[in-house]
Length: 298
Length: 273
Image 1 (tube, chains in turn orange, purple):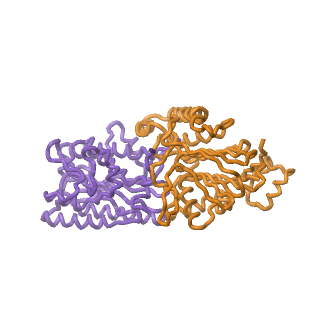
Image 2: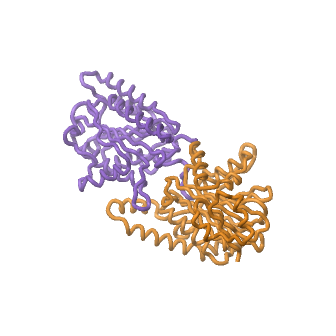
Image 3: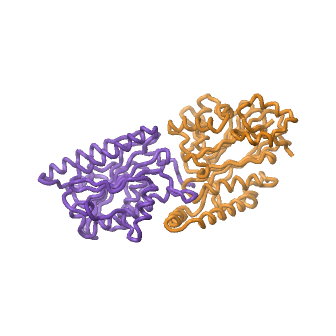
């Protein structure tokens, strides 16, 4: 069984303003997380466009990802970004439009980091493409692996850790790349896959190397309020002062279905809950989850 | 956490104080009009990054404009949205404040008293933020003057000492994000009237400039880096937040914009490769 949860939090407490975004298509086994780069033009529109373009893809050619993405994913994302920007500019006038112009002149294009993950349940395989400091973690079979395109540097004890302080790689709104994609694959097994934007990834790495289990902390969150409380706790220490996006996927063999566990949407219980399926019996053990969405692999 | 790394946000807004010399000499060579106009331009520019989708402006910093001669004047105090409303209300003249009544330049230059007024305002603001449980970004004070401390019936050396002592009290204001930043800007009347001096690294010989240097904040390396776009006026390692004999309005605006934005964003906001 594969279950997943998502959390998204704006640093301004206003999801309309968040530059982080995430999308998922459990039927296709697709998950995307993106983080618009602050010093760019309408990054919040690009992060959304990239996530949507990835989850809408048909068959993905990860073996030739760079060429494939340049042809099949980045053009529709660029088109959506361009159209959304123009629509927004059409709502502005006067000084407000001039401010918008100043921003466009300063930044010219949007930029966003990105993680795309595809779960192939037939092959028990996860394939991914990553660019920038949004980070993919796999904690499977007791192991710990992480992927992003920020450098890994040894700390004082020689342990290699991602350096989140350096310039980031990104996809730009015209489809160009700052930096290179990182692609790869790994076998599915019991454990967790976690897709995080940078502030969460930095926290996740720190907690892991402290000997804690950040994957279990995240999985244990029962509501958006829990997630906000976690963020507020760390913000008080100067961490997580950023938009935050989390997709955490729990893998429990055998991998035949992908289920989404959502919080605080009780009206959807009737719509999505199929009590004829055995997995629905998990509900009593997860009383705080309002929705238990089950989607079979096609 | 690194110094000056908190940045401004709605959860922890920043504070910009513009302290404007309203002594009599500011009337000459249209200096006060230049400052009123430049402030409009600077604030229009400074609130631009606060604009967000939905054509809204985030209140991620507050602005105080304080004038002084032998008195002090609360010219403006408000949030980003208050600034935006003021900018919209000024019409085609684009001057941030009126110069009539009390705000007409006249009298002396009681710099020490003005610094103490700013200190009172800043400390009250910090208390307000802390009471709300918010971390506090280091406040920034931009002092625009055309002269040097001159107090009624007081020898210059005493007026200088008063200014120096009050500046020290102001510079001692500290929050975990860093000490208050005091940027002193001396403007001159006409182009070529004096030799410009930008962000010196050592105390100038001239007594007036030496005082300004001594009462100006040292510049962190991150700010030196951010000031590279000022070209010939760019700061260097070891610079202080001080300029002198700036006559060009466009350059003055660039310098104030730089001073107004140095502490607004965290250091980790690095550009893409």
